[in-house]
Amino acid sequence: MTSSGGHVRCLLGGTFDRLHDGHRDLLKAGLQAASHLEVHVTTDAMALSKDRRIQPMEDRMAAVEAALREVREFGWSLHLLKDAFGPAPTHTTADALVVSPETRTGGEAINRKRSEGGLEPLSLIEVPHRLNATGTILSSTAIRNGSMDTTGAPWIRTPWRTAVMAMSHAAEAHLKTPSGTPYPGPEEAPEVAMAAMLDDLTDLNGPLIAVGDVTARVMLELEVTPDLALIDGQTKRMALDKEEEVDLGAFPLRMDTASPPGVLTPELLHALEQALRADAPCVLVVDGEEDMAPLYLHLLAPLGTAIAFGMPGQGLMLQRTTLAMKERCRTILDAFEVR
Image (cartoon, rainbow, N blue to C red; front, side):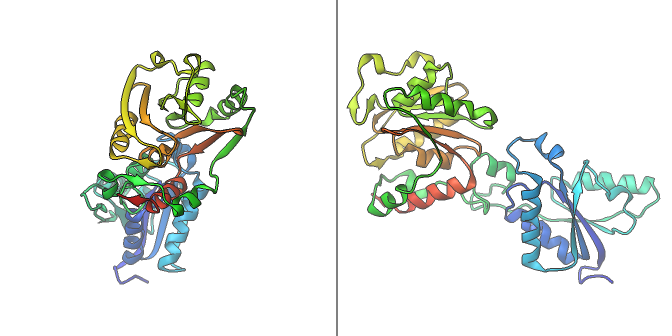
């Protein structure tokens, strides 16, 4: 039995990390091409050798299965891909292979191996890249690096780049729900919470960011230099004593920007983008307040980033940059007043 696409059994292999619309295009093409689609998902051993931030195999396979079921409940199967070619070079019942422009050469290599083994070549079904509004290719790498969501849209909305974003009652209501991992500790001994937090960061797969003077200072005192520190020379909106100030000399790079209390400015957004691209630890000195900066930081930062900030009288909060955290921050910023 063949499908309307004319093929009996089609193969598709990939990592399928952070399943996105480009992946869905590949899956739909395979389902349309053949009566049965075999989807081969790379094992953790293969995937994690490329990038430690890639999702566990079980999560990736579950996402692929859900996407397949959105199209149809039958005519497909899931398999493990343990090497670059998988079963394609020796598969005796397959007659087609889904490829992208970047994997077409791999498909051609598979067909050469099949010819050497006396098998008919697979029909290569090339699916074009999914592009976003700016013409950038939608990819798992770009998603992991923080530049776009799973539809290809940028996390930072265009109006935010030129507008002052002001706190609103709706945004404040969102922020009252805590998000992250709290590390309690006495206010007079912030190193207690900091030491506990740093002990848990053995699995850090991205930049470490300290927001707030006390957070940055104590981190440095424990001999950990964050990749980025945001400070404003204050604690609880009061100027710091000299002995409480952050040692700016601990950072090879310094940037300065301005963001008054209660708002996020385009200047702050631009400075954060520049600081995150820095090739050495950077301190960003904010004239105003830096406490709302994590909303922008999560949207700009790669997945796996860790952002630490103090909670007055309670200790520390550690937030990880995930797709869910990015969605949360974008939702909160959508509730801000745009001036």
